[in-house]
Length: 138
Length: 148
Figure 1 (cartoon, helix red, strand yellow):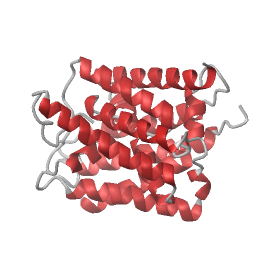
Figure 2 (cartoon, chains in turn cyan, orange):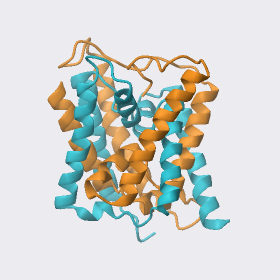
Figure 3 (spheres, chains in turn purple, yellow):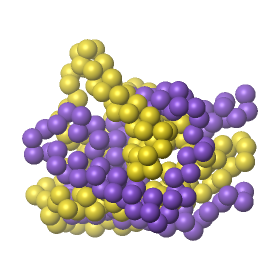
Figure 4 (cartoon, one colour):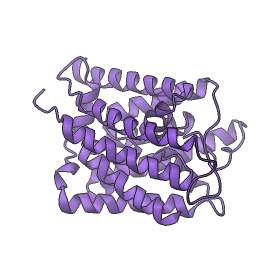
């Protein structure tokens, strides 16, 4: 467990929570990344700009990280590009079908004790763990 | 409203980076409960939920958000097969690649191939699902007021 990084995890989590809180209290929206992005794929007039700006914000934050904390982008744990592509498709399909991801369900939904989010989060944690188990130990 | 969306995105990405969510190895180590388990990402959720819970309590006392006209929030409470199947599939993809949507997109800033491939495949998967729902006559995805 020498990779255990409790303080940066808590800080990072708090910043994620803060960003999501700002979206909620200021804009009245849920900061669920999969929902925000999928809404861009079927643009509705008047409902697109804020989504696009959030995504641009993500990318800009990424650039900030690249400049100040490039270690954040240690992607060495990713599998081969073929498997990454498969993973991406599964995440794309799954988050649309299940209406959310780690931010939408895992943070926003769980915080308000939404039954759908509690169950969804437990489910993706379970299948995530099973998948890693299968990859590592089978 | 738009400026806040942008700034929120920036802060969100920085949070993801500091938290370690943009490192597939860290994600997989968190999910590797039977192996060399690294529980760090559990604390990411704790930190995020702690802050968001406070915000949620505030919002229940407000009649409207500060910079928009109304709350646009999920209302469904039913548990159905698509929810569970979708979450299950998402989890498999997350465990397989080590990326979920936010970190995958944020990592585009690195220009690294895995981030590019993941993000493209993510979009592709979302489009695929949207088309499949249309074809299966479940109707088009209901408006922008999505679950989460």
